[in-house]
Length: 246
Image (cartoon, rainbow, N blue to C red; front, side, top):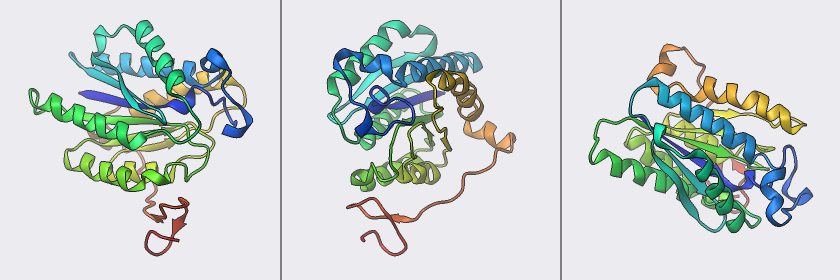
């Protein structure tokens, strides 16, 4: 199975339960005072556990910043140099960070293209995507609404469920809809007040909710997510009862 993860660049400069205006990155110290170290270590544990399920499991990490997206690592899980890749990821996030919503839709598109390329040689390989979101308000990704919904339908058509772990102050309405449309799972995990608390709960949450594949989740009788397909206006990102404009 191919497990792809899209990492929100705001994890580098956002500490827990802090809105963007209350904390600014200071030089190269942003990664030390953020959620990224805990998230990266937890994703490494998830990837290691995923590799233990079957031989030749594959993993790919994509970074999404305001300026660009990047493939941070990709290949067989057992052959990943995690220390080198972690430093490369931190460098990418700090170099490309400016305030604003990251290009999550573009990163999702790259992840889906990556799946299609792999399936040319391994047509039966199952794949799924996990988005780690750090939104501070529900409407932060409203400008990408059309692109995100298009990615959701594209993922559904090629049987690639999109999951989302929301670590920000508020979870994105659009990412909740993407997971629902693609057959994935959305799990909000409100950040704790102290940084070490996140490290305690993050690994168990990832393993419980996102280690099982879609077919296994059916056997586990995991509760389905609440349906929320309300229209969202592209100008303010607010939910609307009629149409998609306010």
